[in-house]
Length: 43
Image (spheres, rainbow, N blue to C red):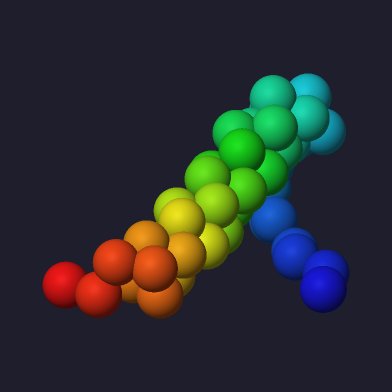
């Protein structure tokens, strides 16, 4: 997947990129934890 960020300097992109990555990782991790809890402890 390629993302196009118009009018964003490279320095700002490099500063934002780790935050975006950690946000996506946290989102996926929460999804997996939720599925695991839902599969093992049905609410």
